[in-house]
Amino acid sequence: MADTEGRDVRANQALLEVRNLRVEFPTRRGTLVAVDDISFHIDPGEVLGVVGESGAGKSMTGAAIIGLLEPPGRIGGGEILLEGERIDNLPYERMRRIRGRRIGAIFQDPLTSLNPLYTVARQLIETIQTHLSLPEKAARARAIDLLKEVGIPSAEERIDHYPHQFSGGMRQQVVIALALSAEPRLVIADEPTTALDVSIQAQIISLLKRLCKEHGTAVMLVTHDMGVIAETADRVAVMYAGRIAEVGPVEEVVRRGKHPYTHGLMGSIPHIGGEITELTQIEGAMPRLNAIPSGCAFHPRCERVFARCSVDRPELLSVDGAEVACHLYDDAGREAAD
Ligand code: SF4
Image 1 (cartoon, rainbow, N blue to C red):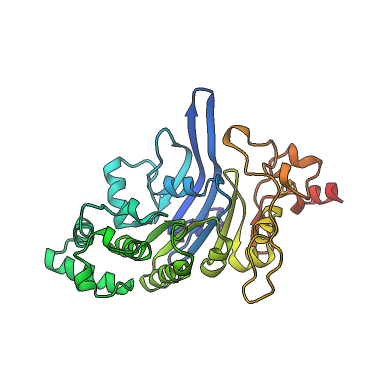
Image 2 (tube, rainbow, N blue to C red):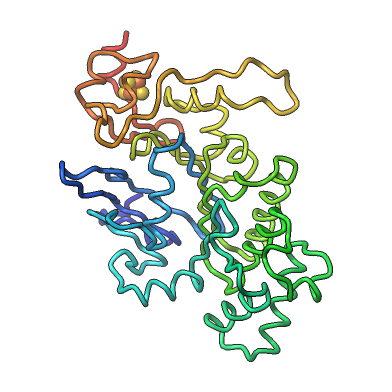
């Protein structure tokens, strides 16, 4: 959105602003592009779901934001701003402080975030004391409160246990407590329930959602699961082959998704409370990074493909409250498709 002088006014209000982000991997045979010129924002307190099949670039985008891209992966272009401050070019130590204090992280496997050799108390208290200047006793009291808040029973005793003494679900509850311990403004949750028992996945997601609402924390929720997105997100970005295919409010994207890829993803979730219709699968697979198709990268799998799709790369266009990168939604494209 631009003001009367053409400045981007919404950018000033966004908590996180990602502009033209490119993530690349240099190889001996050339540079592979995993995230290709994507832009999006997250507002304070908002849950943005980022969805797509494996290899779409979702996790890579999250890793770039928190400064944890594994080498040789690197940011090859664009900017990432947190509360208006650029964070994509900070020295390691500055970024390490932002990670934890202002951006919390929750990964698929809770053991990525927990040190098996330390008690939960030590890990929580150290994190709290690193980011907030609290004496040990107050930090411990805060740690116990957080464990209670995430639903760990007998938190006063359990806090002195080691991670292996907790079940998988409880470990993820501890990780949520850890991620929220310094009251971050943003949490990046990357497939936070995928490794957990199906019976507790919904419980963890609703816990994450409730706590973030209560703490006013924004969430970038990365998942391949449209069901989780439908339950949790305020807005959704659908990614395909390193690009955003569609982004908009959850009801627009989930109920009235416009991009053919979004339709395909929607067809693969059962309708809660409704008849279980046969689940559709999108034919074919996400392209490899060294073989991204020309034009619209989805064209070899798209049921609505037409001549232009393999030649021109579609850019995001505003369509009925969402933004969609598909030639079907520009006039020239529609004419060609008819
Ligand atoms: Fe399908 Fe063409 Fe739209 Fe791509 S641009 S999603 S190939 S119709």
